[in-house]
Image 1: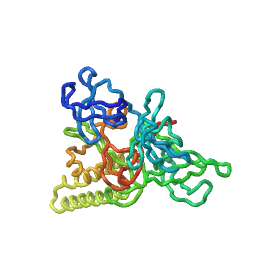
Image 2 (image 1 turned 180 degrees about the vertical axis):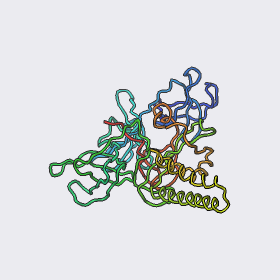
Image 3 (image 1 turned 90 degrees about the vertical axis):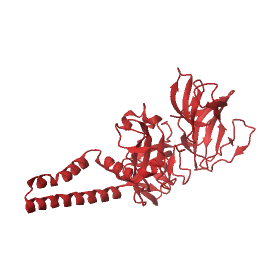
Image 4 (image 1 turned 45 degrees about the horizontal axis):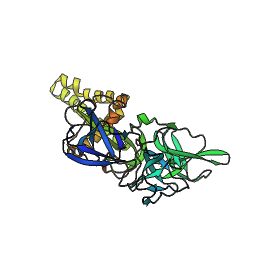
Length: 380
């Protein structure tokens, strides 16, 4: 589980012992990954963002609130480099830009909100941010038009079913409400009145098998891609390490399906020919069995997801081997156990924007600015 350090300073020690070597000193607002509690809750195992591990005292105050995404309004944000109004200011994002807000803490009677900008600068604003909080939602319609402005007939995109968008405030035009949306690539637009949307539950904020516009990590082309969950282990299939999300398009899946069917059909025909040529009946009996099993697996409800995982595993296993982790088929459905197990595991992503591999991201890709929707805001 990712959390922010709330205390002014805390020592990270090599072992759960106050006499152990100090590996680092964490200041207020530093984000870490909390692990197991040991020695009767006296120490908590943590992992720093640079991958180093250590221990902090079990009574260290932390906040595990997710970073929410805000659409900055016309009023500029007064951002300081520390929780002190007399310290240096950081330039405010312009109206319409997105910023991330995290832990809220107090100094005396004053409340301060942690802010992270798209250039990875971190600061603090007094009180709550002004603007509108974005909520991630799924579009259930087969084709949803995105308009340039409220009431405009100029369409900037047409999104298929299962697309993910960030929904912001509604704007009135002609007596109708047009919802402001932001796409994962950062582009914006407006949904026509009465467009159906499904708000995503923050507790189930993993990408799953949903669709977005991006680059396919298999063919490297721009397409409607689905985020495929691969499961990482450090050893056997029960040694769960984390998850990685890989973008892949339906074109690659269909191409692989046709290739597999052609090969299995050829094998069946060859087996039948051998049967008639040499009289080995058992060859003809089993020649088409692999093809039948392939179709049987394809028709199962999770057939597409499973075959996508196989394609992505083949394409990315070597990359993950360099990080000393392996890609394995899951021994359980992570979404069924998300609150207890998978929400606390490390997350990786092959960014749909730039196809670079990242680990434990901020709400957007540091390279191309693509929004990662599992860093979503709580529903309000």
